[in-house]
Length: 357
Ligand code: SF4
Ligand code: SF4
Image 1 (cartoon, rainbow, N blue to C red):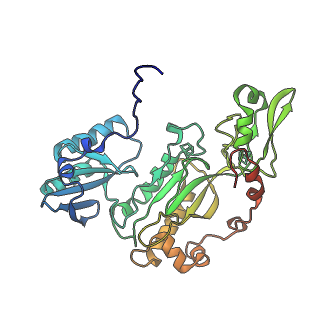
Image 2 (cartoon, protein in one colour):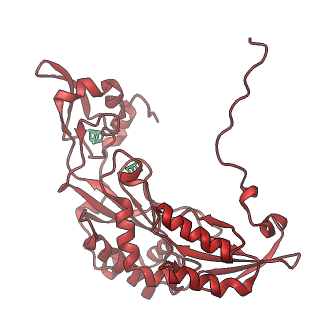
Image 3 (cartoon, rainbow, N blue to C red):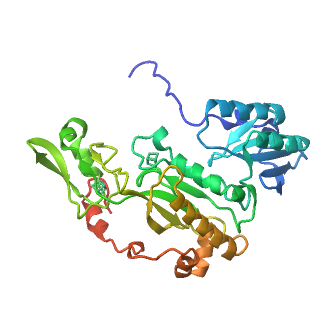
């Protein structure tokens, strides 16, 4: 062994304390209570008597340098120079002086941003990376988010929902995924089309075969060249073979659709985690404004707002009224595609190299 071993290089999240507002650092773990004076604003009071005000601002999620500088300048002027982003890309300013809150809100609204997203609101939609960072999207998740938030802006600004609503989007079927009260996810409806001329040059065939969750891919010789073939009866159109083998093209302008899922929720003090369920499939993936998907989301939100009891999350509301009534309330057809009668995985997942149970 070498006498002096190199120290491992630690990566990962930096220490968050260095970025915290000094009042938050000082009172860490010693907060007495908090209140919600108006939509988009929180006031936390510490045992020491210190207080911190948080103003939440919606952004367009993928921010250009100009907007970031503009938002940071506002933070420097009104918010002691501290900002942070929430997991849903809301920007939060923090101030120790409550008398500056109104001036801060005016400054961000004058620049065209919106304040809200707290308590019983529809907070910012979260989305996966999409075309900007990833090589396999079937839709532009950030475009879906922008179009929907433009329509839901009043529900972001106000707190008139029965409880908070988390909406997510996902631009492929297999990776980051979208799980929330309402999730808008990509749905491929046709098996991949294989460009046999490229497979031998680009793809590691055994990894691609092993990647398929239903063992639908086999090695094949096509025109004398090593390639792959797909058993289309088995293929569930998940798209998992496309990332390791781009010649297995599955994205398609017509056959790549959107699906809407409802009722996903983490466990909390009141209940177990719940999985989301498919409520609408085959919705056109229709840029630049995705009007069909947005119309369905708005119907679901309207029915939830009118029908749920105070503090019921969407999954709790649906559990109480039952799925048949949910489909009636949101005027969506219940079709054979909503019935999970697929049994292929019981046999085929056990034959994968990687998954055994
Ligand atoms: S959801 Fe899929 S396509 Fe979108 S960023 Fe994640 S891995 Fe990429
Ligand atoms: S990985 Fe998915 S899309 Fe590719 S062949 Fe298998 S089931 Fe079909």
